Image (cartoon, rainbow, N blue to C red; front, side, top):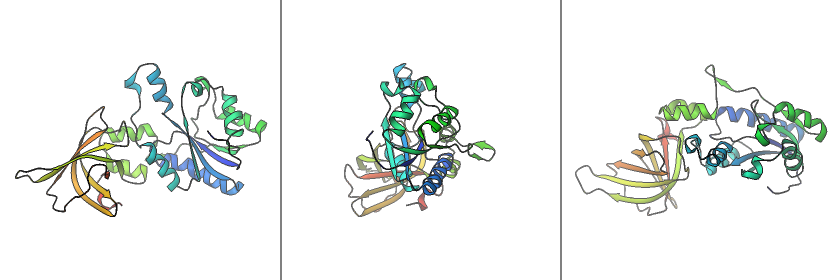
Length: 279
């Protein structure tokens, strides 16, 4: 994490999905940064701390599936108006970092935090000893302010990354699109393409997903968009995503438009009935 000079309002979290609950926190950070006339920033972690601890314990079944790839997350944060996104690698040193060192050395010493915005269940430091109450106590020592918006509730339920993963596992893409604020999408690169020479007349694609552990698996209707240079073609398709694989098998029936995309072309898979209208 680089040392920086500008004063900042920092929203801290994993922000997987950048769903409405995350956007609630980001909006509070943006309002505070504007009021204090400081830069709006996000501090997030890669890998997810839960993934780090699951791998260290050799419990792969506890590794959370990812809603977004790292690139999608950063793009969504920027599109929401955040000026600076800091991604800190979460490793054994961070796992053992004392709460006081996290605040004093990193948030204040390196990122020059004058305001910090977190969710009400925020925990930090070794063994998750730090919490919002501790953060507020430290604020008087270091001279920053703390904002902690209440959890965002929609339809009587708290919106969280875990709830979004549950919706994705159930294939509830319309509801997922509502709580994300946009249709759910997986991005990647074409690694294989071939036209079938039979009466079904379809084109087969293999897409290597940017997301290494997508939160869905199974066979789904999707809208495929392939882009290379200025060329962009969208078509209805059927995608198969297998557990433990980051390669999606995509079949496009009745595709009449020639596709001269080649290996390495950018591809997106959008899910839900409104996905085809999204660019």
